[in-house]
Amino acid sequence: MLKYPEIDPVAVALGPLKVRWYGLMYLLGFVAAWWLGRRRAASKGWTAQQVDDMIFFVAVGVIAGGRIGSKLFYDFASFSADPLSLFRIWEGGMSFHGGLLGVLIAMWFFGRSRGMTFFQVTDFLAPLVPIGLGAGRIGNFINGELWGKPTDLAIGFQVNGEVRHASQLYEALLEGVVLFAILWWFSARPRPRMAVSGLFLLGYGVFRFAVEFVRLPDSHIGYLAGGWLTLGQVLTIPMIVFGSLLIWLAYRRPEFEERAAI
Image 1 (spheres, rainbow, N blue to C red):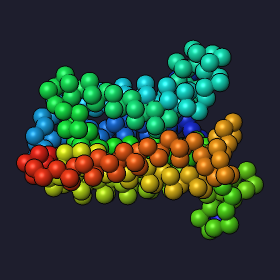
Image 2 (image 1 turned 90 degrees about the vertical axis):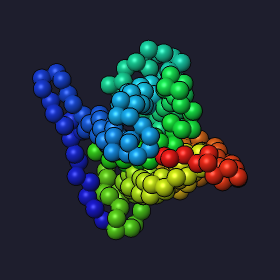
Image 3 (image 1 turned 120 degrees about the horizontal axis):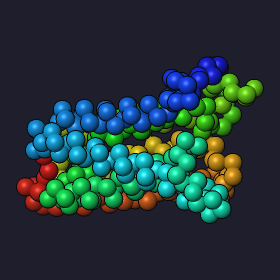
């Protein structure tokens, strides 16, 4: 059994200004994506300026989509009662699935403005994302939120008198480190268009679906069916299906010249 260290969620306090670790994790994710994108830009036919612009679009999509998704998917009752709560971002509340939709919309606008196809952009972006996902889950751990079910395993953390799964760290490992390693390796060589994007959706979907079995659902939502099915799993199923479909379509194409130098 491990003892939760009770980390102060505020990293730096300068008078009324408070810089939280969770916000710094988002910043780390954007910086990591920018650095990795710059590192691969030339070999994939991108310019440094295109990478810089793409990361700006990504940041807008993540923040706007994540916030809207959090309210619509997980807290619609309070949103409908107080729509202005959407803009009180200091109160917390971000959704991965909402952020994903926000990024997809942003990448469509970015690609259209730069003369690129949608999947040309997402295939380049996909391997850059997992580090940010992992950092975000570490931010959840620092905040002491999104704990898992009680466990008697030695890797469990004692929280408020109970030993629980550190589901945040499980996701940081799987969705961050493992998914990054898979995508970085897979995208190092030319692949059919859509294959890298499909592998990201499939990989994240499988990892998230699995961790949801030990992660507690939001208390105001609970389980949706069978005493085990969560909203996170329901929202993740389309990712698994669509990701598998993209990979199948990518490798079904006979024209190897359509393979992207991602």
